[in-house]
Image 1 (cartoon, rainbow, N blue to C red):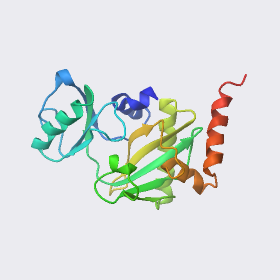
Image 2 (cartoon, rainbow, N blue to C red):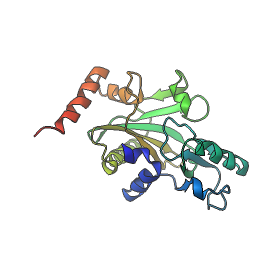
Image 3 (tube, rainbow, N blue to C red):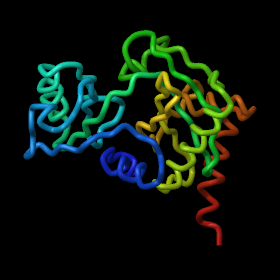
Length: 214
């Protein structure tokens, strides 16, 4: 869980594990530089706190003036940031239970990107299973399983992906404590397999208890 929360470390592990992810760099507050060009970054880009959650402090930067403002905002939350290339495309999430991927869910925000508005009812259209070619579905599920493997997420997790217009897949991050209300993404994915919310909770408990069996 700690590895997944550190977006900079997780990105390094994704690259080492053959998982496609947007190119990016880490920046510490004491080494701050306010010029994207000086850092070798192209705009647009995404600025986000390294270890934050719930999309807090995340900004899509489209010009030089916005870059400095995005750093100001993100550094309010913590002293290390991840800055990565902006990938425009469709948004997806893939739950993994015991290293096995669930059906993919597509998240289509009504407005903007899937930020803190994710907690507002009706802010996005969620489609599960996602309408994707079989080859893309299998690739994305494979990458979600690889994320669980390289980060050691051996009970359950949920990984977020983008798919660009060229059908190139990018893994953004892994969530080790995904939402677990009956209408959250992971339970929706399990529901497609006929696993209701109570059964899902029991399954996660059973998997966890197996770790302590002798």
